[in-house]
Image (cartoon, rainbow, N blue to C red):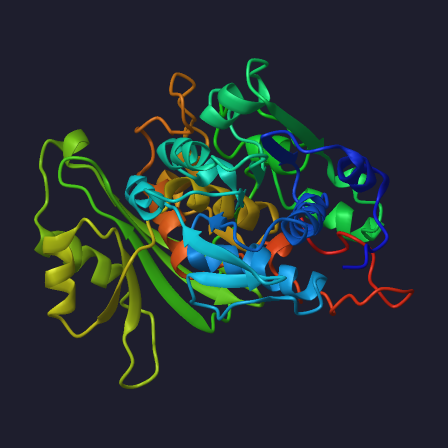
Length: 418
């Protein structure tokens, strides 16, 4: 395959020989995925066709989106696999294509003898799967090539690979500034879209512990006033003794506003409410909301609230949607939506606003986790952002590169890819 123009950092990586384990970490849009796929394709091409290779992502879908479409473009179509196939072909070599988002994934590769493994988003892969992969890399000269954004320095990827001098491993740290093909305005904008620990990891490329306030830059309170809302939704975190927090959201001119809140703590009052009482209060909060005739108001609910969901589904007012409950991804997307001004909070939502000033990371856990206090309205916000897909990361929302066939027409490396 012809080699496109590379940045200085990418060239440095291309010129280094492979170790057994090879990790590219660092900020988004730094060019690491792009150059890792080039080197992976070139390495596979010169191996015997009898050998077996594997490419892995958190899910099969994320692997397709993050890597496989780009790999096809970079190789001029020499890689091919259908979007849902578990096997692809690269220069005539068989490539197994897997998702590995839980411990059960290790069963997928037992008994395999591998010459090479490529892993996307390594910090999101179970350690047991990583260890099984190493055990399967038994062909002479076999290698693992992986990319990731940084996480906590307590994460196993950092302790076992980055900070471990006792193994045959090499790591390269890429910064967004290393990708000199990016437009300066794009870089400025994307830096504004992250804050706190996510800025440190995804922009600065640092392995840092999540500590302090989860949303340290919160500045999204606005006066409560009439607006011409054109869409509505409700999100809800359910509690029995713990608070139940529901937020009525209204959409106006590109922004979702928290218009009103319902917040009730059975623990604080020592008088827990029934599902029916919570339902009646939420319905009363939405009394003035008009939806088109025959439609129902969307109600996004904590998926564990089975009894409340059953009650709400039996009534005529709401269309119930089980919330997407991915905690860390939800926090990251909510932080980005806040920084981009895509969600705002009327000053009447006093409990929600109070929680923004209290909601904190737990500094004593090995993996990222929040302190399970002052988090009920925060969970309600997270459910809303994730379930309605309020913010799609700029770094993942790009058209694919035109197929590179060499010469001056090829686009420069890493222009839109990580």
